[in-house]
Length: 244
Image 1 (cartoon, rainbow, N blue to C red):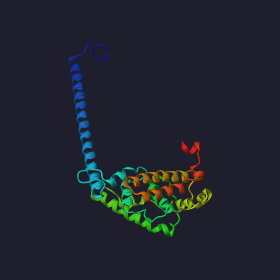
Image 2: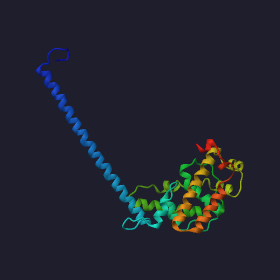
Image 3: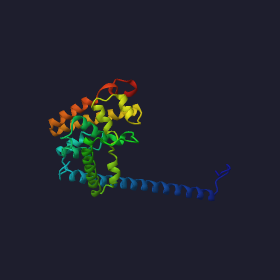
Image 4: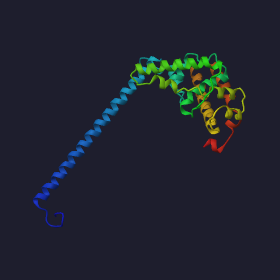
C-alpha cells in the first residue's frame, strides 16, 4: 500500500527498494569501518607493547628473550607508584645511605602524583636535598629511555610528577611531630594529610615486598622501621570515615 493506504505504485516500490539498498550499503560500510578500526587499535596496542618491551630490556627488567629478571620481579611488586622508576632506584642502592625517616620522607615524592599538592612548600631539609636531586636525575634518565623507545614523554612533566612538597612534613612525622604540628606546617586539610600518609604507607609495604624479592634483608629491615615510624597516632586510628 502507498503512504495514504492506497495500493503502492511502481514508483513507490522503486523508491522503497532504493532506500533499502542504501541502508544495506551503509550497514556494510559501517561493519567494514568497525573491522578496520579494530585492526588499527590492535596494531597500535601491539606497537605500544613492543615499545614498552624496549624500555624494559634497556633498563634490565627483562632479557632479550623477554624473560622477567629479578629487577622486573621487584618492579612487579609496586602498584602505588611508577614501578619502572622505583625498580631503578632500588637497584641503584638509592635507599642504602638513608635513615628510615629519610627513606619514608623521600618516598612521599613517589606517591605525590596521586596526592593534593602543597601550594607553598617549605625548602627541603638539607639532609634530604641530595637524595631528592638523585631522584630527579634518575627520573630524567628513565624519561629519556621512554622517549628513545618511541614512547612520547615530556621529560620535565615526568620529573615534576615526583613533587617534593611533602618531604619535610613526612620526615617531621617520622621524627615524632604531633598531628597538630603537621597541620600547622602546611595548608592541606587534615583529611588530605591522612590520605597522603596512608598512601605512602601502602608504597612502603610494596617496597618491602620488592626488597624481599631482591633478597635484600637490610633494606627490608630499614623499610620496616620506616613503616613503624609512620604508622602511629591519629593518622592510623580506626575510623569508619577514613576506612570507607
